[in-house]
View 1: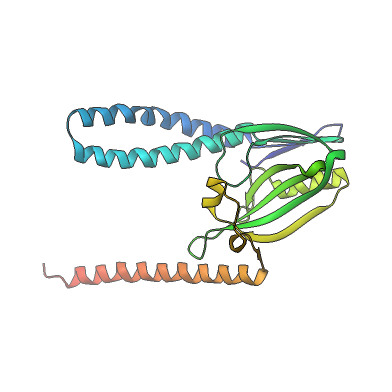
View 2: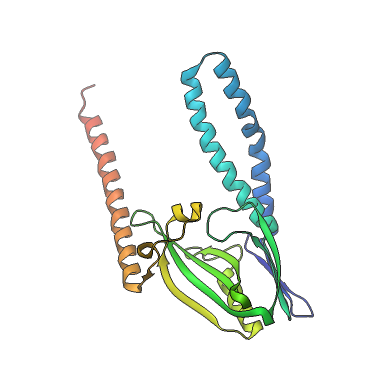
Length: 246
């Protein structure tokens, strides 16, 4: 399901999600859609019948189902719409209209001549903390007039991203003959990305490799501690079950 790249006689390289990925997300969406559409009718029937206990549980399911469907729709749209065409004179893009790693539902098309590019940047952004750190690589085009065109984000843990934006950024820089800058890593917060709040200095500071190694080490230790706790919990339950008189 990785991105497909094809070259023509004009050395134009096309990047888009593979057909299997597009088909898979479309199939999952169509499979779940009838169940999701039926939820409002089910909620109405329970409220009309005065079944408040059942209604509360169904509301929780409906909220979780809505979040799941939103993620599936976002991934489906990304697979179908996202497109990068690296040509000889310019790069054509269909990318999310807003920057950031959160799911997107609106897209914007660009055609950027290489002469308009001043540089290309890639930066690692770290979200979360010790419990669940997420490291993303984001790339963008820096244009004349201080304009910015975002390319997109990939997870650093994903060895086969659908569209390899950092590699595309390097290719665009090479085609344009402009520098590609790997900017220092920074901490971000998802809350600010969702609300589009400018990061504060403490949350937007540069991160050293030593801090990243320490964060990874803390995360591993925490995960091991959680696993050990669960093993002890299950083991205690098994022992107590054997010791309980029948």
